[in-house]
Length: 331
Length: 150
Image (cartoon, rainbow over all chains, first blue to last red; front, side, top):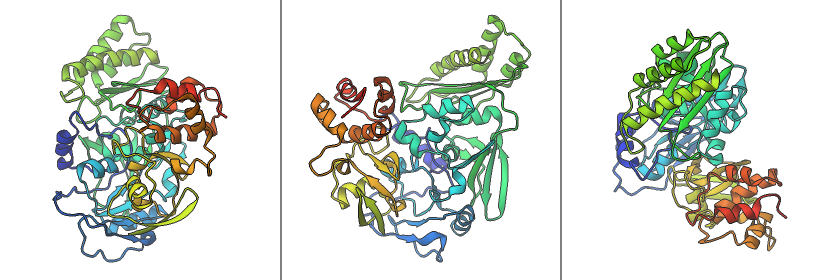
């Protein structure tokens, strides 16, 4: 769980530089939460109360350091909770939110925990519930989804982190996002007003920014009816576990050559290099020169930044290498 | 806030402040300092516990959300003086250097080996990827545990 605000992002850059890798590649769902500027010198009062099973009282005065937590057991209850507390922080796997609590002084005042909402934990055909963990996705029949799930964090992180949380955090390095972007999957969100579906490209709007509205929660990622069978995902990092992507990418190719590619961690959102897609989709049996051209066009489309993980130059170079390798895996 | 949960088979009630982690509660309120506090961001695995049948980092679990949870810490793996086979194997092999990461490794390895008792070295390395030993004592840990314990 976590939130998407400019403040959060600014603080991320300050606090995570070098010493504190943010766990944004992993897990959590996000409400339309507003991170409050907090006075870290204020003593934290160890008081809070549990709101039983979504029976919410009229919210009273909020105590700094205290927390009100609602524990809905159904999606309907969860939407009622968010209706009453539209600014609540949504807690799914906790692997993003708790890093902010532990290291960044974040003090959520109202929490809606989704742990008991069983409806969210279900994969039903092409509908992947927001509460499905990366541990469960390691066994997905979609090769790229299974591959990316295995690269998330560690067994401990994969046991907790959810795909809905990955979407809610909306980090450019979110591991599931290149797959969802390449497919242009639909993101299903719900509130007390009902359910709506947002194409991925309209869902993630910037670095840790989504089009989720106040009072809404993410309920599922819905894959298209036809998912190309040739799939590959890979990411570049400093080790093979517990790593936040320097570059990540997913390539999908149909038997007729139709190809999609999405790159992560090389722009504010997922990058879909359309020129590269069009060019390689027209090649039934790409030559080495065509693969080189594809790689060049992908690298041309990305807009990486320099930060503590890598320089923009390295990211662009790694993008070209990764795009070419991913393409070769699906030919 | 008062929450009720089961820790190492015992029903416990505990007062939770704000968004405290389960790790803090285990160590400071429940008298169970076996789970170690190091990175507080899920990076090192030294606070690994089993919560509701899943291996997780206690530092990333919000205690306020633990009502009715069932938690097993490193203290809950041994029965009286009988050590868990993972503890016994690591002791025999001298797979401990400074010891700070050891409880996390013990819990993570016990979780995995209880389900896959004959795990090969490569699988173990994969499954223990979330546990970091800054003495770099991985070789002896894997040798202690690979290919079957007890």
